[in-house]
Length: 310
Length: 173
Image 1 (tube, rainbow over the protein chains, first blue to last red):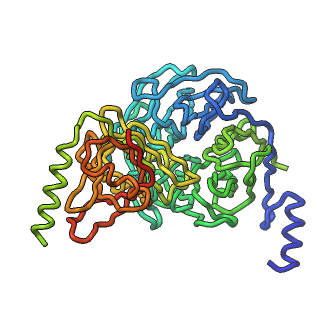
Image 2 (image 1 turned 90 degrees about the vertical axis):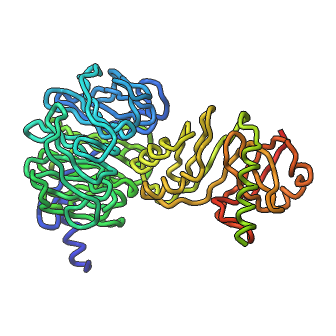
Image 3 (image 1 turned 180 degrees about the vertical axis):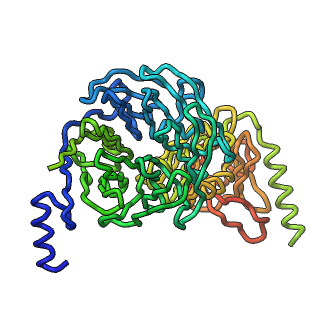
């Protein structure tokens, strides 16, 4: 970048604008809670975070094999789960999600299933078993929902996305192992943004976007430490402006892109101070409130940020 | 040469059978694994390793790339399954070390360590810490706790064997 270009870019950033004149949001630290341990409100590897329509926050506390529920300010409300494979027990709960009815869907790496609970943690139903056939899983890592209420599940070792109805009946699947466009290499998150299906293609260090039939539309990212580069792109969120937030595990940051994959900004940076991150693993965005939550896995905490559009 | 290999194999087998199968076995195995970048990998590997017979608990340190496995009380970790499982899960296996209880025997003039309660037998790669106690241990029925590193070396004249052990510590129980 020439001196002149750098000066123009700096001026635009001061104004809160991107290099193409697009207005950039500010992401400001609001609060954090947690700490290492197994008491209520503490975490042992908080790997997944989700938010419901009322603003409550759910955390997959993977090392403690439980789910914890908090208010939007981090006040502890409830917990459920213990190690095991029975109903309401967990073996590594991962990227959970809450649907429009307030049901909490929890994928489990170890038990190769998705369990569904009401908002108080009462078991409702589950589906899945170990394998590679349709409806089977080998380490389901994330769930999310489309506008029809269908459930999309990332199937880590089978390198695919499976789609089910809300009760877990198999509908379709897409993806196969590889590095070509459309192929996946250990996917870890999925998000439906209204225009397509975004997948965190973690070990291809990129984001891929598909249409609802699984046809690839767009992709961005490669391995590295610069803008639009990732060291394990392991989670995705989308805000009310359709900006895409990608959790960049080993770069200890979150990168933000426009809907077309153009880099806008980043936040985080390695550390344990407020606003810093150490190996973050998930993000949940409450578009109504304009806030987001990051599972700060390495710091054993959840951090809350506010998205401010200037 | 074929006869020597056959006799070696036969001797190892007989020595294994002669071990009292009731006493304890492999207590712990540590394995270096390259490519463990995040919890999605480590939980995945943990899941695959737990499927190996005899594995009770798997602890993974992502930063150090170190996997620690402990045995079930009623069984013993099948060590030669570890490397294939790690490779199948998409990672590169590194050095393996273990702590186990067993007896020291001899096969084709080579000392061997027979893991108690199993048919696992490792050829011992001689070193100073072993030589100090060699005469006291070889061919006796004494139980020993051994900590050592496993490598894929096969001494000349021996049938190809999964592992050779370099003993780092040996104590008579």
